[in-house]
Image (cartoon, rainbow, N blue to C red; front, side):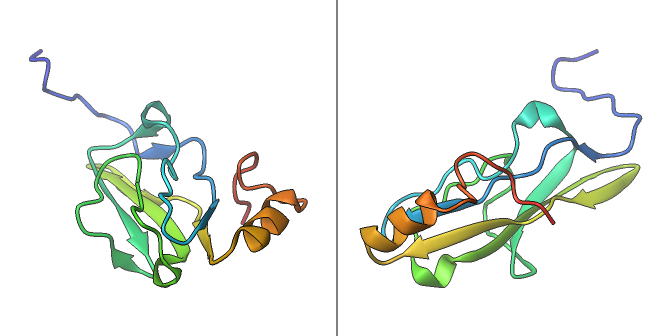
Length: 118
């Protein structure tokens, strides 16, 4: 088999869900999706507010210079010949000051430690 050829004979699978992030306005938010090894897919892309995110077809997403308008739910849709699946949403929270961000991260749902549950 050629090194670039993928033999896929099972349904698409996401075994771990993406994690939410909280950042200051102007900062970068990265790695919102599970590790590549947790996903068995041939094609995929990120969605936010039901719209495809341009150029976001890898298993990680970097939001550069996050702004309030970019806050919201981000999901990944993975597909192969046997079907498609959408991840649970990861929420991107964008704050305008450090006190708000610190209060969010100090709360019981630390977004650096736990995945989003739906």
